[in-house]
Every structure is written in structure tokens, then in C-alpha cells.
Length: 269
Ligand SMILES: NC(=O)c1ccc[n+]([C@@H]2O[C@H](COP(=O)([O-])OP(=O)(O)OC[C@H]3O[C@@H](n4cnc5c(N)ncnc54)[C@H](OP(=O)(O)O)[C@@H]3O)[C@@H](O)[C@H]2O)c1
Image (cartoon, rainbow, N blue to C red; front, side):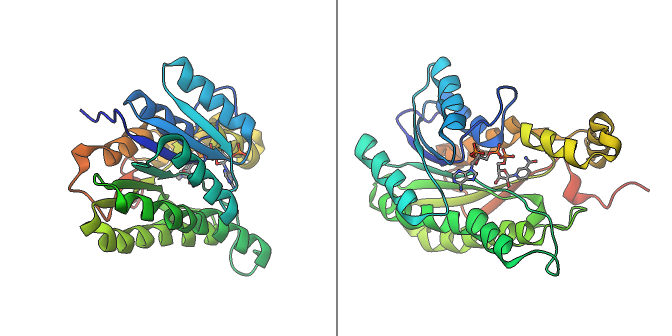
């Protein structure tokens, strides 16, 4: 089940920024490799991408990396061109890069707004701009998986309007593009993670925890979820590899919410 042998997966944001733990991008790359795909990954910092590459190769997988800025057209084109030079095809595209900056319209600067739109949304357009023409020419088509957030579905307790707006836009970008590309055998779907415990969220907790009490802050986040715990990067990665696989061949223009039930709850009384 869910084997991806012989498939080529192009990924953005596969870097692992810390020695310990797993970020979402690194976990998706590892899972794809474990299922037999070869990975070609772009990341802003090469050292983070090297960490993921070492982990994948240590587990017997294949992973090439390239320094990439997903907000820059020439940089994304170079990533795609080099993947084609190396492997001759792209079967899976995973758009993982994304980051939240706090703020509401009155206090967010125009510069931060533009950066958020470029990082979270334009990046998805850019990879699709270069990769979809390749996928549609392939007899076996292709599968695109985007990583959104429940912040694109709901207000989740803190003002992050640019992040919320761009993560919502990804959903509609994928839906409309999926309809256009359905006859061409190219599927587009989106994973929508909820509260996920990653090295990045651990670092954020240090910033936001009242009195610096990270343990209490994490307990509070766990308690917000009907399942009583945050998810981890593997919960997201398992969903991504399902959507990438041939077992999901009739699924397109959809999103799968991976959130332990939180978006279906109005909270506890
Ligand atoms: N963590 C959560 O709780 C959560 C919840 C919902 C949704 N998500 C979404 O899940 C995705 C992954 O989140 P994560 O927490 O796992 O992130 P992460 O560990 O920080 O990984 C993101 C990677 O993207 C890279 N990157 C950042 N800007 C880039 C750029 N301009 N060009 C190329 N690469 C760039 C980073 O590179 P560096 O090594 O240079 O930092 C990093 O390796 C994001 O889309 C996020 O919005 C996360």
C-alpha cells in the first residue's frame, strides 16, 4: 500500500532546522523516501536541508537538495530545471514552505504583508507555474500536495491575518487548478494541519508562554484539541503520502484536515 517506487518528488521547505525532532517538511520528505520516491528538495538554508538529506540517506533513501528561495521565480525555475536534468520527470510536488507573522490589518506593515503573501501563496503559484506543464506531458500525470493550516479555515485565537488569508487562498488555488488539470491526469490536493507539535512550535512556545512556562503552555494547547493532544509532523506526513499515492488516484480538488477534531468543536463549556 502507498508505494511510491520510481516516483520523483520535488519538495519545498524540506529543511530540518534543529538537531532534535521533526518539522513537517522533513517528515514528509522522509515518508516519501521510505515509500520509495526519490527526493529533490529546495530549501532556503542549505544546512537545514543537509540535515534532512543525511537522515533520509541514513534510512537508505535518495535525496538531492538545492538552495532555493521559493519567493524568487528564477530560483524556483532553477530547482525545477535541475530536477528534470537529474531525473527527467516530476511525479509529486509538495509545497510545504509557510510561516506565520502576527498582526491585524491596522498594525501589520505593508512590507510584512507582502512578504507573507510571497512566502505562503506566491511560492505555490511559482512551483505550479513551472511544474504543471511538465506533469501534464507525462503519461502518468502527477500529484501536487499543498500544506495549508486550520488558520485558513478558522480564527484560531491569535491575529495573523496575512497567514490566515494566504492559507485560505491556497485551498481555492488548489481547487480551481485541480478542476482545470483533472482531464490531464494531474491531481491537486491540500493537507490542512491543526495544532502540530514541531521544533518550530516549541520555539514559538518559548516566546509566547506566560512566565516562560513552556510545559504549561504546551498542556494548554493539548487541552484545546478534542483528542487531548497536539498532532506531530508524522500525522501530516502520513496524509501527504496518501494523497501522493496511486491509492488516492480518484481524489482531487480536496483538502484533508489533520487536526484531532479541533475545527469541529466550539470548545469546552
Ligand atoms: N507547525 C505547525 O503547527 C503548523 C500548523 C499548521 C500548518 N503548518 C504549515 O506546515 C508547513 C511547515 O511548517 P513547519 O512548522 O514544519 O515549518 P519548518 O519546520 O520551519 O520548515 C519550513 C522550512 O521552509 C524553509 N523556508 C522558509 N522560507 C523559505 C524560502 N523563502 N525558500 C525556501 N525555503 C524556505 C525553512 O528553511 P530554513 O531552514 O532556512 O528555516 C524550513 O526548512 C508550513 O506551511 C506551515 O504553515 C504548520
